[in-house]
Amino acid sequence: MEGSKPGILYLLKLGELTLKGGNKANFEMILKRNLQDMLRGNGAHIQATYGRYYIRTPAGGEARVEDVLRRLIGISGWAKARITEKTIEAICAACVDEGKVFIEEGIGSFKINARRTDKSFPLDSYNIACRAGDAVTEAIPELRVDVRHPQGAIAVEIREKAYIYGFGHKGLGGLPVKTAGRGLLLLSGGIDSPVAGYMMASRGMKIDAVYFHAYPYTSEEARQKAVRLAETVGRFSMGIRLYTVGYTAVQMRIKEAAPKAWATVLLRMAMMEGADSIAKLRRSKCLITGESLSQVASQTVENITCTQSRLEIPVLRPLIGMHKEAIIRKAEEIGTYETSILPYQDCCVLFSPPHPILRGDPVEANRLYESLELEKLIETAIGESVIEKCGFPTPWEGNTQ
Ligand code: ATP
Ligand code: MG
Image 1 (cartoon, rainbow, N blue to C red):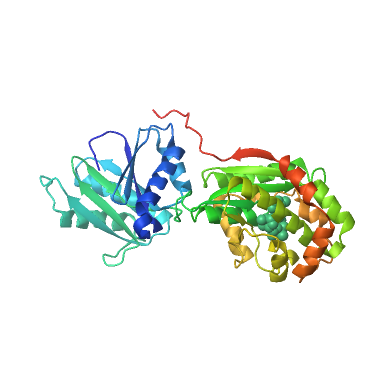
Image 2 (image 1 turned 90 degrees about the horizontal axis):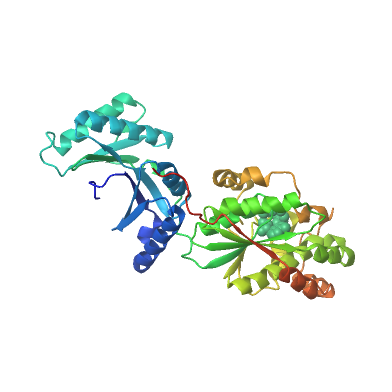
């Protein structure tokens, strides 16, 4: 840490990344690039050494840096170093401030790790730790000292100035976006699919998305909802390229020519086929859906077998074993829930039959599907799809002074 330069210093702790053996250097390079893209224009300087990252930003740049750190996939925690004068009073006050952050983040026990590089400082590291520890427990009685297994540690380093930091802020964890290939998310306006996209992004995947629209049966507001969801998830995932595909003709054909009970399963099969051709164009390695086992009739294991039966590309379903409450909690955490519950219906609701088939047979599904002769309609729809870039990092134009 080069403490002599002016400005504000942030420290980042890498998460699971530290476990990645031979790939580690590559993962770290990608994380650094993501961080640079997200901070572009802010005047921040990023330095990476031995599994620690430092960001130095000009005064005034804190809000931007902290916003980025809350959205950066691949770090387990971050700290803003408090830089103070070398007096024990100033050091104790900074430790107390850090203790307050611990409480906000649900950390209940702590210890002080003191290091004295400047030996002219009158207290040795043991005494610094004692004084600072006492100051914290006195000011914040609910925070306990635990030197063996503390939930959080406050570091005090005495150099040309005193540096105090605590990693009180939890990071999102996961693996940096762009370390796991590209996937195509089937994004509806519902609660589940944005969460599914976020979860794959947090395993390192770069996400594109496709939204199937049935205008005028579904409204422009419903489409805007999908765009907003892509923007919200895109802010975590280094942007999302969203394909909007008009599927009205496909849906009408299914509605007119297929047995009613099969409508939803057949529509899902048509969506999968359309998505498959976009995935080929984009060299995506998988499709991603928000399906969760037995949540609705089209998500029984038999019907899922039908919907994927025409595909070679794998379909990843990160929510398959999750309960609805847990999915909702995640949606709230990432900020998609409020948008997802807006009342505009997506296409499937309007076309869903009152008594859908529960355990479709894939052979029958394919026989029906082929009799509809949807290829041309799907091809045209994909050819006319509209592409929007949602949530990509944008250069910072604010005042950093
Ligand atoms: P969601 O909340 O994600 O809409 P859901 O519980 O409503 O999910 P379904 O409507 O059965 O479930 O959809 C299952 C999955 O199919 C969705 O999670 C999504 O991945 C995909 N999907 C559904 N409708 C669309 C659409 N209009 N465009 C793109 N993908 C869709
Ligand atoms: Mg839905």
